[in-house]
Length: 165
Image (cartoon, rainbow, N blue to C red; front, side):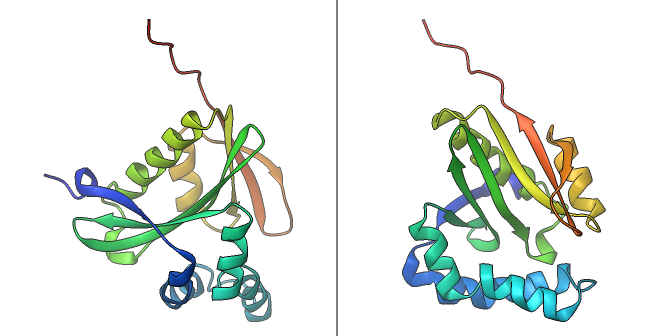
């Protein structure tokens, strides 16, 4: 059985924000090594300190561990924004990349978007992260507008689910 077949999500609780922050910050420092340190430090303070994580949770952001077998393979976060599901973060630890786990984790979020009545999904991607852009394009996302100097928005229209008779 493949690692992707054994993939699941485990919701992260507010009291686990410190642990998530400790695991996530080194991952993002490596992914965004090309970003000037003062810009990256500000981004991390605003999004991945324990206080920032708890604040986002209280505003409706859902954080989850991506589980492969019984191991934590990465994390993601998402939130509903009117009729749109915003995929805020999807990061896999390096040793788990390229094994189908990102696709499987995304499928969970897409399913949740359908359940919550969303008509589309959106995310932002760093303009230097070509691997992520290709990954999201392979999932049906299309490149949209530039959000700022370093990020693009990508969107995916969701097809309606058929109604059971």
